Each structure stands twice: as C-alpha cells, then as structure tokens.
Length: 192
Image (cartoon, rainbow, N blue to C red; front, side, top):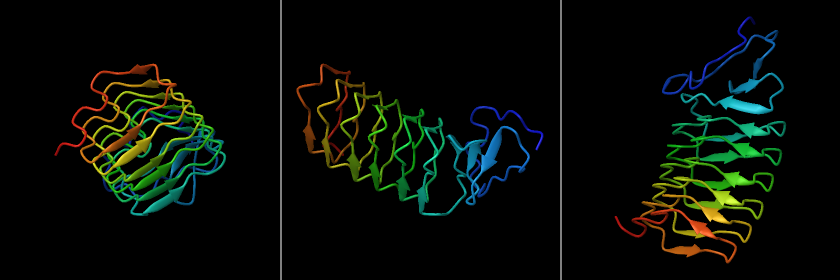
C-alpha cells in the first residue's frame, strides 16, 4: 500500500512474472483480475506481466494510454483488443509480441509511435484507422508475416524504417496525403 513510485521498465524481462498484485489502499496503482498493472484510476496500462500465459486480453474501456513497453516480449498473446478510449500507445508497447497475429487500432488513436509493433513476426494483418496522421520510425520493423498494408488518407508521414524488413510485404497502398516517407521505410520488403 505504501508504494508511490515504480521506476521505468521495472518489470521488463521478468519472464516468469505472471501476476502483479497491488494493495487495495495504494494511492497510485491498481491491478485487474488478470494481474495487469495500472495507475490508480486505470487510465494508463503500465505493465502486462510477461509470464502471463493468456492468449488474449481486452484492455479496459477506462484506459486512455498504453504505457511504454507495456506488452514488451509478451510472447503468449495472440490477440489484444484495444478499447475506443485509448488515445496514446507508448514506445515499444507491443514490441516482440511474436504470437500477436492481428491488431485493430481504434479511431481514438492519432499516431502510431516509434517501435510500437517492432519485431511482431506473427502479425499478419493490421487495420490502420482514418484517425492516424503519422506512422513512426520502426513502427512495423521486421513484421515478417505482413503481406499487405493499406495506409489511410489521413496519414501525412511514414517514419524511417517503418516497414523495413517486412519480408513478405508485397502490397502497399500509399495515399496522396503522404508528404514525407522516411529513409529506408520499406527497406528489404519482399526479401528473405
């Protein structure tokens, strides 16, 4: 109950950690029934335990921000449902989620930040909504199972290495709205 600060990346690489429990009187943090760590009001999802062997997870509707590294290296998850309240997805939030097969980003999100889906090798489909204006650097780097991507008319910028090393990517639709494509954004696409 007395813990008021948890440092950045505290639980990263805790491979066997399956559950985080917060004292009910804690003024800063809370957890859900699956042992996922949140801020007190469950507006920020801070850490999904890497050792949790669930294959799917639905982010509570109260969450507006998915924190940096929140699902980092969570290899068991095949599906994560992001609620319509989420407006921000942190750096490397889903990086190395190698079993994640599909992702629908809600309309409430306006930017896919840097490294968000970095090395999600199982990701076969991604739905990018019309609300997205920017796709960050390395956003989908080494997503080797992606075969096609449709970028909506709302996007104006695609970051460096955004889709680099997506070896099976054979179809990309880039709208007229895109004014900037970063260096090597599609480097090694279609190459094993």
